[in-house]
Image 1 (tube, protein in one colour):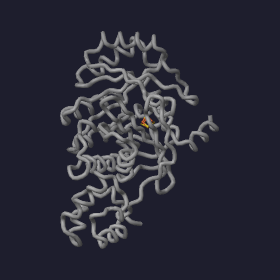
Image 2 (tube, rainbow, N blue to C red; image 1 turned 135 degrees about the horizontal axis):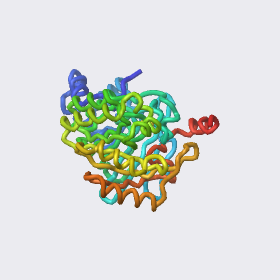
Image 3 (spheres, rainbow, N blue to C red; image 1 turned 60 degrees about the vertical axis):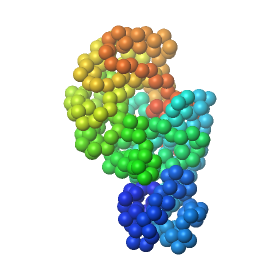
Image 4 (cartoon, rainbow, N blue to C red; image 1 turned 90 degrees about the horizontal axis):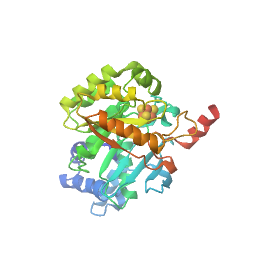
Length: 348
Ligand code: SF4
């Protein structure tokens, strides 16, 4: 099997090709892929035929197939991609006036089984390879008339459970000879994988970190996120303090609002205690109801009242993020491949 061209770091590619072709040819190749979005070596018209043939015989240029594309009334677009082994993943493009955010997957399924998340119910099928992450970016760029401005690892999977491949993909996407994508516009979201937070902090790769917190009380977080039983809040806090020393960007604490679960005064008090000495912002996200999950969405009154109290109690910047693409099940925690969803429903 040939190596995918989309997972090879530019400097490796240049040094590999330099034995056969002048150095400027690899720059031309990178331009075709990353600037012009051309994925067929025979359409790279300024390359000599000998090089086109060599590339086709040496590397795999194939891309995942888009097997479904759904557009939300809010403009978000969810794509289901079929990978070379027929596994499927989803990615979501979310346009705003000045931003176009791409939410990518890092795994097929997820092992972390958070109680509010459909992906977690799929279990883990496998990690994505670096090229399969880069391919999501390339395909999404091709599907959009606008330039992608923000990249978030909040799709299917826990990125820190596949950190090596995620970091390789990010290095490739941020490389000056490919997409030169901005570190401050790249966000990894984690449920709180402690060794991964330390490794990411020490990796030298600059990205923003978002932590899916959802409760600052161990008893509740244990229920919502089984990862908390292994890595409880005190160790999470220690890891975040370490991360913020090593990384220039402010951490975001994501907090899904679930009435009757994590929206009491005691929850706010615990959140204040947890976030007190962190340089962070706090992002509240109303829960999206899903038929096979046992939680309700908060109504507008509940959201407004909680926000008012939070703004009075917490010194940090607080934002409310309305999930995008709910009508196409493209919102936070809603990504799941159809075949598995049917079997899940059957099992419940
Ligand atoms: S919220 Fe993230 S970590 Fe938790 S199950 Fe879903 S995909 Fe996995």
